[in-house]
Length: 244
Image (cartoon, rainbow, N blue to C red; front, side, top):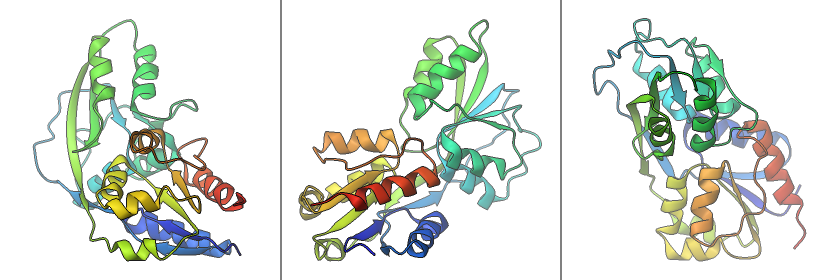
């Protein structure tokens, strides 16, 4: 067992599942969510015109749809293009046909690949997203001449955080799962400085989270090769193995 404690800041069942898996591997873990997901469904009519695909960058969107108990038969798309296997698996659970690309890691790269799939004629897409999602994906596809509607199904709000829970650990691995989580962390100046300490190894889940950490001048110890739970576990254990 390592001396470092692993902070899992992902909320809900997914965060709890990651804690259990890390504990089974012999690691000390604390589940301290930085954000909470709030469903916005049912919020608006979802009587979309016929579309060619849904574009999905977050597993939280699928969970929000599932929790709302929506009947998707009238709006089921032919295909869902997803970023990462974690997001893909969440949308598969809605009985939707899903496709991922091995080299796609964020919304921007998904937009490029989808545009390449439909380069000969303009298409209609629905971007299923959270309220604070980055806008690169729909903006890029619109530049390629495609129509992109946006279905906002959830929001993220700051969790109640006690900085002392983090600050009492000088040796730690800090996992972060969204730019919003980085924003909450850095809203506490002592926590922002704590994350920069040599004994704290920061592991973001994806590249959008990495970008926000770079903006805050926080060094990253490891990042998953792909945005999947299995690769996140590899990245966490890589960070744990780094010698001080």
